[in-house]
Amino acid sequence: MAVGDSTGYLGSASWIGADAYELGGEFHARATTFLATVKWDVLASISSRLRNGVPCDFSEKYSIGHFNMVRRIAFADGISWIARLRLPQLKAGFGDREVLDVASILKVEIAGMKFLKYVASGSCVGLG
Image (cartoon, rainbow, N blue to C red):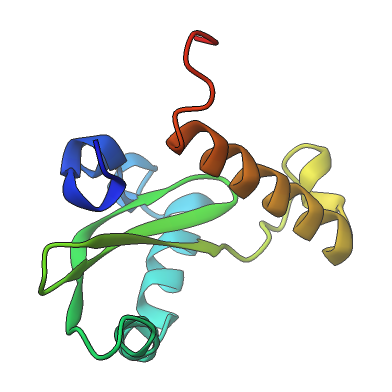
C-alpha cells in the first residue's frame, strides 16, 4: 500500500483536534492559537512548489498532541503529505522532553522520522 494513495494508512480519520481538551484549558488554548497563527497558505505554496506546482490544500481535520500538530496536505493529483509542526512549549514542562535544548530535540525528531521511514518501507515485517 503506497503512503500517498491511502487515507486509512495515515490515520487521519481518527485524528483529534483541540476539542479533545478542556475548553479554556492550557492545551486547548495552545492548540487553537497555534492553528490560527500558522501561515498555512505559505506552507501550501512551498509544498506545491516542491511538487512542481501541483495545487494543494489542507484538510480541516488536524491532530494535536503534547509536542506537535499534524495536518494533511491534499494535492490535486490524489497524493497526500503530512505537515508535522512543533508546538510552542507549555508553561509547565511535560516530561523530560520539554526541557531539551534545540539540538537534542532535533536529534529526537530525526530519529522519529528515520523510524517512520523504516516502518513505511516494510522493513519491519514481523516486529509487531
